[in-house]
Amino acid sequence: MAIFTAVAQWNSFQDTLLYITDQKLYSLQYVLYTYINQASSLAAAAQNAQSNLGSIASAATTQTPTSIRMTIAVIVVLPILFVYPLFQRFFVKGIMLGAVKG
Image 1 (cartoon, rainbow, N blue to C red):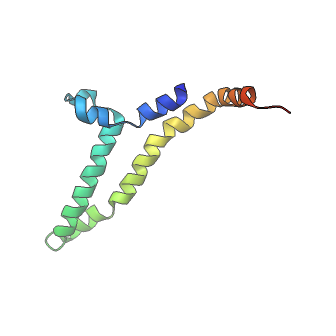
Image 2: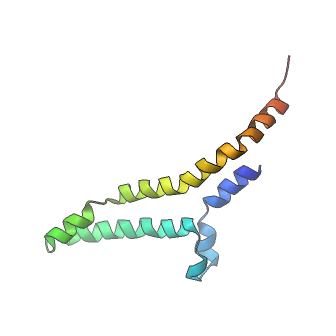
Image 3: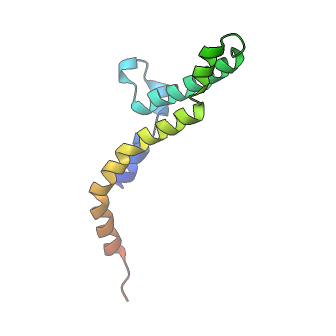
């Protein structure tokens, strides 16, 4: 139960969005959430300004919001992937204790 609660808290950014106003206390997920929003707005602005600022707009559109979203997904999942093998032995014990023999 503890690992599932920790993963749920790890992925929450809405608590920060609602309750915290000091930028020093922002959680990693909230900062990554703001990066995704900024990337989407930057891509939209680059599409609108592409005719005016040719080279700058083309440089801004090479990193699409989807690529930034996927990079953030990897950043969020990596710590859980490192922690899970440490707790895997407890999962196996729990499964073996709850198994029905017969």
